[in-house]
Structures are given as C-alpha cells and as structure tokens.
Length: 380
Image (tube, rainbow, N blue to C red):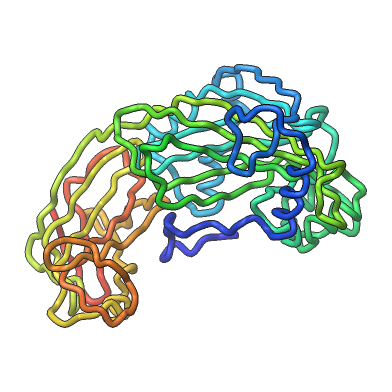
C-alpha cells in the first residue's frame, strides 16, 4: 500500500497483533513447560526451536539482496544516501532455523534517531507455503505479489491470508522479527512492515524512532518467532512455537556536518509563519532540515494546519524539489522553546513552530528555497 507522503510520520504507532492470534500464543505458551528464562521475549514463550546460526558475509549475498532500499523505493518512492547504502551492504548476515523456516537477518542501520532491522523468512527446503507476518491480521488480503507466487486459480490479491492457506492446502506459517534495544536507549515509537518477494518469501521490517548517541555502538537483541497456524482456528498447530534471539552490535552513524541557514529577503511562508532559521544536521540516513518559524500572535494549531504547515516544499536554488527521505514530523514549541504538554485541543495558541524534514542527500546544499502556501523563503 502506498503511503501518503504529505502525512508521512514514523511516530505513528503500529497495530497490535490480532486478539485471536494473541490468545492462541498465550494458550500455547502456557501449555509448555518452561525450563530456563534465558533472554526470552516479554511473552515468555519457551525456546523450542532447533537453532542453526550460520555466519555469512554481506558480500556473498550482495547480488541477491532485496531489502530496505527496494522497499523504501517501492512503498514511499524514497532512497537513502550513499553512506546508508554502504552500511546496509556491510551488515553481517546470519541465518537461523525456526522449525521448517529459515529467517535471515539481512540488514541493520541506525543514526541514533532512527533504527532499522530487516530479515527475510522462507521455507528451509524451498517448498511452497503461505508465510504470514504475525503482526498483521490473518484476514488481510495477500496482495498481488504473494497471489502470483502461490499460483492458485481461486487465490487473488484480495483473498485473505487464512483463506489462501485453506484453498491452497499449503502450510500456513506466522513469523515475526523485532529489535529489543538496551534500556538506556529510549524508543519513542515502533512500526513494523513487510514486503513479499516474487518467490513467496517475506521481508520483515522493524523501524524504531530512538534516541541513541550518534557515532557510538549499541548492543541490541534480535528476536525471531514463528509457528504454524491453523487457517481455520488461527491457533498454533500442535501448540508449537519456535523462538530464538541473537545479540547484535549495531554501529550508530555519526553526525558528519551541521549548518544553520538564515533567510534572505522575504521571510514569510504564509500569513502566519515567519522563518527565523533552518538548522541542518547530516547523518548516515540523510540531512535533517529543521525549519524554525515564529507564529503570528493568537494563532492556534487549527490555524496552522489550515495554512498547510505540512505542505512546505523544500527546493534547491533552481527551484527543483529536493529528494525527501522517509520521515516528516512537526514539533510545536511555546514562546520559551519548550514543547506543549499536549496537542489537544487544537484551539491551543502557538508562539513558534519547528518542522523537521529528512532529505536524502549526500552533501549539504549551499542554499535552499522553502515554498509555503502563499510565499517562498530563500535561506543560505
């Protein structure tokens, strides 16, 4: 599903696992004798997978790698700077066996503010199966790519996952991969996504909005969980759940450049906002551009949204749109520069505003143009 680029925000929380799946997992967990508490997920499901960890270099998989870059381009029409691509391709991959599935941890990436994990799930012997991201609802449609891979006359893009498994008679596997970060790294929000490949394998994506120190490292645990699901009852078959974890050292990209741009000439983006400066901060993932503006006295949040605060376009000096990254967020500040305790109700008055956009650039532009609803501001 394509994302609405005008409202793209990684701070939107991801949906919870469906109630039926959650109940089934909890019932299965309670039916198994727990032998040791070593590094289990909060659900405390006992590790019953036969674990096979095979260390592999990224170079061995470079030609076949289809991960974060492909997904970002396909879903959001955005790319990543050269440094991020190099960090992704240098990720040390490892393949873990979860029952009849193998899950390959393919990529990790972090600049401290945003952290990514990708993993690919497929059957260990290459046999066909319906592999389902357990963070989703099994009543969701399978989509065009998986429907084509399954190649069944009664299965279309609109067929629910559980119905596709029932119609095809193939095994129905639920799988999930996620990161657990150290306690000193705050996680503001987390969003999970997935992407099917033409062979029916499943790319799992975990994105976290974090507050880690750029230029450092963090020890994170990658958790993997899978089970075969009954397509009718939606319960684990034979109450078996395979789960394991792997400790990873994730290098956090450093801040390579910082700059403050000041407006030249006109400073009014619209009738409400006067640009004071633009603060730029370059990381491995891109350049975060924070537009700082004073707001007309008495203006409310409703007024700002009516003035299309999220519709500000960033252009180069020749008027061409600069390539956006995957994040856009608006931080509303009071007159002393502190966040408001709440954005509700919308009638609250606003003294100043900061809007942050991520640009997918390798170098700082010498100047840029901010194009608002009724005006344009050049900053250098």
